Length: 331
Image (cartoon, rainbow, N blue to C red; front, side, top):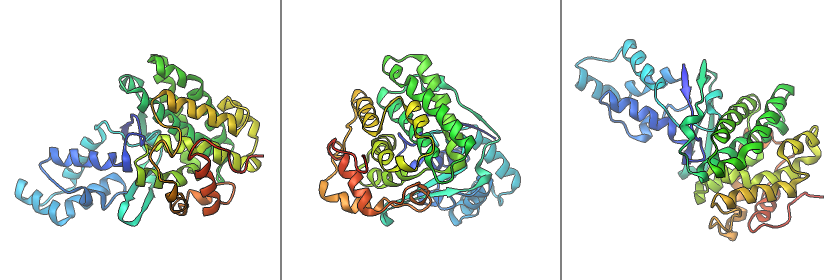
């Protein structure tokens, strides 16, 4: 299996790209299923997902009408081969992970689906495919990769290998991210390598508080995923600092002295790429912060954070980035 990855969840609200790929594959075969029908088996291994779609009431009826017979395993194999050749935006570093996501606005939640059969046997990451990306998207995508690596470094499930991968990913991205503003080809190469290394890191550990708290910000206010997690890096770092193993190594990779320095660095990158660096700038209502904080505890992410999260603590973090203000837990 070969998967191509470009840009990531920063451009893909709701991480809908996998369902887009399934839709393209089915459309090429003459089948037309709704997004809801396509998403229903999401999280299954891809061949199993295809079988479920062909077995659905709509899928099986359309197949019979088109081909005059029921589908078989050769048909599954053919659709699978088409799927694997499709260029898609499954997520920053996702080509080396086993996850898919489902966003459910009606239930006010985002679910992460894990299936080890989704690991690719091989992954091709071509930085030339990102050469024409707008700076805003390139920076947001890069910061998402940094968040993956940073969160992997301090996750409860961290280990020596994931920490080494995370540090190299952070150094690679943060050391070249400024070159994106000049459109330097070397910068896109560094972003591609860094995001892949970050993917390898967090595929071992999962993410933590930054991702958990960011989900409702994207769902309710449409803040691009990369920008949402990036704004949360500094306040979460401030809270986690006492529990982070070899904090100096992490700060050194980030190129900052402390959480306040990281907040300034992230804000500068967002503003230079024409993105707000505060929740207020993204149009978030201050009166919504308590509600957003309550939604910020995501199972599998919040409980992977080295410091216990509570709605009150999350609300403090959100307050700290509402306008740029003091960072909670800093001391």
